[in-house]
Amino acid sequence: MTLAALTPDLVAHRPDTRTEWWRHAVIYQVYPRSFADASGDGIGDLPGVTARLDHLVELGVDAVWLSPFYRSPQADAGYDVADYRDVDPLFGTLADADALVARAHELGLRVIVDLVPNHTSDEHAWFQAALAAGPGSPERARYHFRDGKGEHGELPPNNWESIFGGPAWTRTTDPDGTPGQWYLHLFDSKQPDLDWDNPEVHAEFADVLRFWLDRGVDGFRVDVAHGMVKAPGLPDWDGHVAMIDGSDGSHAVDDVDGSGNHGPMFDQEGVHEIYRAWRRILDTYDGDRAMVTEAWVEPLSRLARYVRPDEAHQSFNFAFLAAGWHAPSLRRVITASYEANDAVGAPTTWVLSNHDVVRHASRMGLDDPTHRPNGIGHGDEQPDAGLGLQRARAASLLMLGLPGSAYVYQGEELGLPDHTALDDDLREDPAFFRTGGAERGRDGCRVPLPWEGDAPGLGFSPTGATWLPQPAEWADLAVDRQRGREGSTYELYRAALRLRRDENLGAGGLQWLDSPAREHVLAFRNGGVVVLANLDDVDVALPLDAEVLLASGPLADGVLPAATTAWLRLP
Ligand code: GLC
Image (cartoon, rainbow, N blue to C red):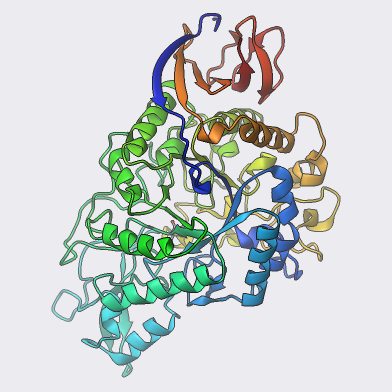
């Protein structure tokens, strides 16, 4: 097969002359407990992040998003917040957070922090007060407390399931030891959902926003952004709750036109009022503060409603993540993403990995690379590591060639796979426990980073301690082993990010190029660069006059091998 005749096809997106940083930024996700540990307890912390910010400058990203570091009992690794205005002692102090932001700004990096508004921890002062105050109290009205059904209130108020498995309701015990009311939790029982019909909740979060904006953060990543408002009366629903269809291990449905997540707990009209209010707050600050929503909403046109001009600035594009490794599906998702976001004037974002999904180097090594199990463990199908890495590098180079804003999850720049053979007794993800182990959960993508191949704990911590063990093969993937090594994944990302900046690809346009190989190869032009991604297992011949700027794997004899992406200059 040959790419000799690349012919101009559909223009899916036009260049963007607007200059706000978030329109074109590459944003690096730091998962604080696994990035770098300064204290030596085996859990990463904020001073560890600050000490390693140079790595991100060397890599060439524009901004950092930090997963939660707030005071928390860590029932869901910090997504269960007990105090939104303080740092958990595990991660440091408020002064450490200030130092991190200051150092990042000195280095020219923006900082986005996580905001978790759908639920608090059950150890939050509000929930403790609600338990103490009893039924009908204003304290309980900040959450969803209800009497149970059945003769003695012994049945949950409705049939909703928790996304982590089991019922979405837990019954409380009254001070005299008798069973009391139930409370709603879409996630773990230690994460009670707030009632966003209550104005006090709105006021509290507006204040939390200002607290962090005043400390100088450049914006927020909003957790479960489609879940805060529930349908009136909390009606029963027989659908299946997952963050998106397929995240529970079944096959991804059609995220482009699909109609997932329309249950009474997701994507209700009222959430948009919240984003409008928050946008007004952000707009009163200088410096283009931005907000990105984690909204697992389908179809893409519905997701785009979160990024209308007076709402959030960006939304994660999980349809792209879910499209797997299949040229026609990816072409369709990419085109539909621009169509939906351009219609509201918002940038399109791209993401392949994060702290909730099996890393793309492992997903793409599965027999079916669109399969997205919630974790991989002993006894499960093990990915083909070599093929997974080759495809992951090709997918990353495809992603970084796309106009818009891209998210890089810590460690993907090293080509890290998941830990796919973690002992079940080391797992911490509540999803593992609440499903009785049927889902392995997300620990495998949260293993501490390897910095130095020869150091204990691969340089993650000064004592060698790591809260989860690192696979032995990771020594060779450590930053120091890959730095300066020709062809390493780390150097591939660096080169791609440098070229992306030099060629202004983030602000560019996308014109598809057609060829006889269109079923196997994605081809498009972004400004002066032509991106070709061969997703199949056949080699294709490159155009004769192509100058190769960068490739995700070795190219020989004018051929673009299987599972390889190349950036070319064509005359
Ligand atoms: C989001 C987070 C995930 C967390 C959940 C509940 O999906 O990314 O890690 O478990 O929300 O807060």
